[in-house]
Image 1 (cartoon, rainbow, N blue to C red):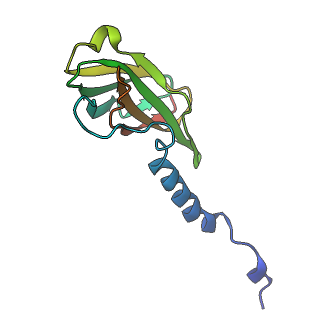
Image 2 (image 1 turned 60 degrees about the vertical axis):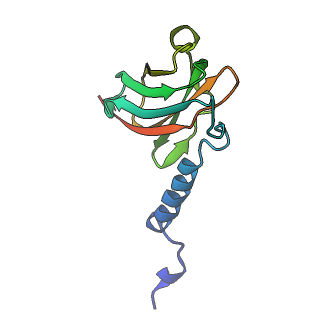
Image 3 (image 1 turned 120 degrees about the vertical axis):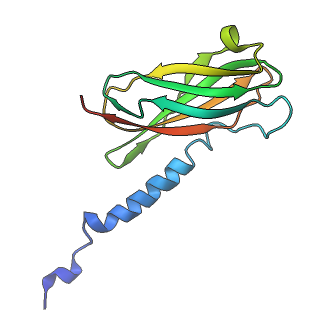
Length: 151
């Protein structure tokens, strides 16, 4: 009789469990940070989140753009959360990059926001975007992945 029957399962048996935990964490990552205001009059809406290029090299700028619609035309800021998924570990972004939209976008009911981001290490990055208006209405959130590879 083999003596191996009492050994604990190896790394291969734990992999599906880790992937499942990562999927749950990724699907709920914004729920504790930002709560969107229910849709209605005066609540901003964002759409069409894009990153270019979708696969970038370490240190290379990635252009992030998205469209907005705000019937009150009173946007004040965009909040961009940069999380990462590297070596099977999910690291949430606790502090967003905040873009001041008062000067450029206030008074516009429809428009587009553009910024750039860089990363100094490789891995899968998750970019999550929200906008906020003067009445503290928070838009829906959009999320996109970016692959950062070695130089």
